[in-house]
Structures are given as structure tokens and as C-alpha cells.
Amino acid sequence: MDLSIIIVNYNVKEFIQNLLESIKSASLNLKTEIIVVDNASDDGSIELIKQKYPYVHLIENHRNEGFSKANNLGLKIAKGKYLLLLNPDTIVKEDTFEKMISFFEATPEAGMAGCKLLNTDGTLQLACRRGFPGPWASFTKVTGLSTLFPKSPLFARYNLTYLDENKTYAVDAISGAFMMIRREVYEKIGGLDETFFMYGEDLDLCYRVNKAGYKVYYVHSTEIIHYKGESTKRSNLNEVKVFYEAMHIFVKKYYSGSFFLLLFLRLAISIREMFAFFGKRKLVIISVLTDLIFYNFTVFLAVKIYSGYTDWETGIPDYGIPVIYTIPVVVHILTSAVLNVYKRDRLSVLRTLGAVVAGFFVITSLTFFFKDYAFSRGVVLILYFTLPFTLGGWRIFSKLWFKAGVSGEMSFRKRAIIVGTGDEALRLANKLRKKKGATHR
Image (cartoon, rainbow, N blue to C red):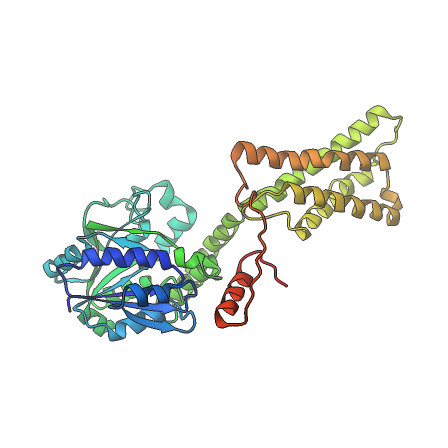
């Protein structure tokens, strides 16, 4: 057997079908076996493989065992001279397998190798050749120096962006989306570390290959397309949390010999995780800050309007100014949060208007209990008459001008009735319940 191809599948039916078709064309001159380990998919993947690809060796897990454990199940029964760990959301070229095997035959020091990975737009995926996250590489990554100086060998060690992507060379690590390894190397170092559920296991395997005295290579002469993260999108996993947990496991495993080094690396990972967390929620943060600015601007405007058209000479006393510009806006932001105004992917005008109405009743109720701060009902009326235009206005402007927060805004809630008591009906009902934002009776 020339090549054993191990694929871990989870709810990517259309992608794995495309991959298996591309493998057909790439295997014409080779003796290959395909092992698919399915992590309890419920999208019809198993039925598709059984029906259209009966030659595939299918291992069916009854739950999601994770990437490492599932790959190890495939590796244990593989018979090939070369072993390939391949993601299901990839498409290989007709010459990929032959060129990779030819490279191994011509490069005896190569223990493991990966080819060029491309995004759907043809750009290079940086993860297909990278350095280990040592102290300096981690520092430059966290501080953004690697992005600021992508062509510098000093600052761009993590993603190796200073190296020519159209040349072949030894690297620290390659991507788990495509990892080809010699059988003798696998038998010497073992499979993936099952401590890693997903992410980090490829970095760990590369580290062990290097430690065993072999080299890991990036091979530029052939490429595959990688639709990155498709399985993760179809799971309930917190991708950011799982990824950075894996990084913590990696540094603890290999850098625990030095307390200060371990502390530095874990701190760097935590900082990077914090940036990733806020990056995913930047629309929420921007919305809260913009509401704070526009709300207090509207308070200022309401006071000026009321003072200009009435004989309200006393105005707001000095002791009341800090309260007037903090408590009402805090009430509004909390009310908005309760009404789910702040979302990561959209700006909701209608929910904002609902929060304004709810906030009006909360503020007017509070003035009955705190008489010293009930300065003018007229100001309150002007404020809450104007807020829909200011708070709703900036959202409408952002949606129309910057196309910000329009994801899913025009979609309508759909209702579905499932009639039945069989296994298929229960499967569909459970799948619908797990969908984000779904409600059921």
C-alpha cells in the first residue's frame, strides 16, 4: 500500500463528497486506502459514504471524540508506506499525492511534510508553514511586530512570512489540514496526543518529529484548497476557547522546565486570547460605547432645548451633573443588554427602540424615589422623544453607509412542525433545538 489517507469527518457532507471525488483523480497511479473516521455526524455524511463510496473504510464514532482521538483510530488500522492526515474540507490536486511521495523518496531526512495550503481566493494559508511558539515568536505575535514587519526574519518567525512561499524548505511545523508522515516515523513517535481535543495536536506532532531527529518540510510544488473551519462552524464548540486551551497545554507540556518562561508564555497566550475574545465582540463594544456617547449628547441637548424655550433658570445643580450623565445611560445600557440589543453580528434598530421605551419607564419610576434628582419632567420627555432618532439614527447610518451589523437582519423567524415519534423525527428535533436562537414548544 503506497498511501493511507485518514480523514476525520464531522457534519461536512458536501465537503467530504468533493474531497473524495478529488482523491479519486489524485490516486489513479497509486495504491491507496481511504479511512474516514466519523465523529457522530447527523447531516447524512455516513449514509452518503456508504452509498456512493463503499470502498472507503468507515469508522463510526457514537459521539464527537475530537480530532486527535479520531485520527488515532484511523492510524491504528492504516497499512500504507506513507500516512496522510487530511481535513474533510479540502480539495487535492491530481498531482498532489504523487509529488509528495516523490519528495519523500528524494529526501530521506524528511519525516513529515505538508504541501501548500490555499484559501478559496488563492492566497496562502499562513498555518501551512510556521515556527514553534517560543518566547520570542510569541512576543512578536502578541505585540503585532510580526504583522508590522512580515518580511523580517527577526520579527516574523511564527508564520515565517519572510520566506518565499514558492520554495521548499524545512520548517518547525505544518498545518494539521494536510500532514503526510513516513510509517517508520509514526511507529517510532506514536500518533497524536489525545490530550488535545482539537487544535494544537498538529504542532505537538511536529515537535515530536523534530525531537526524534527527523525534519518537517513545507513543499511548494503542489497545493490543495482548504475551506478552513467548516467542521467547527457546525459544532457547538467555542472555537476561540478550545484553540487557546490547546496552546496552554502545548507550552505546559514543553516549556514547564522553566517557571519564568512558562509564566511568560502562558501570559502571552492569555493576552492573545483576550484580544481574540474582544475581536469577536468588537461590534458589541463599539455599540455600547457609541450608545454612551450619543445618549449623553442627547441629555445635553435636551437640557439646552428645555432651557432655551422655558424660564427654567435654576437648571441642573452642580451636585446633580455627575449623576445625570452616568445613571440614566447605565440604566439604558443595562436595559438594552436585557433586551438583547447588543449582538456580535448585527445592529438592531427595533430592539433599541424597545430599550428606549423600557428605559423611560425605569427612569421616571426612579425619580419618585429620588426626589433630589427629579429636576425636570420636561427634560425627560424631550430626552426620550429624541433618543429614538439619535440611538436609532447612528445604527441606520452605520448599516446604510458602512454595511455594519447587517448580517441576518433581514432574515425572518421560521416556524417548523415535526410530526413523528421515530428516530429520524427525534434527530431532526434535537438538531433544531441546538440551532442558535432557536425556541421550541
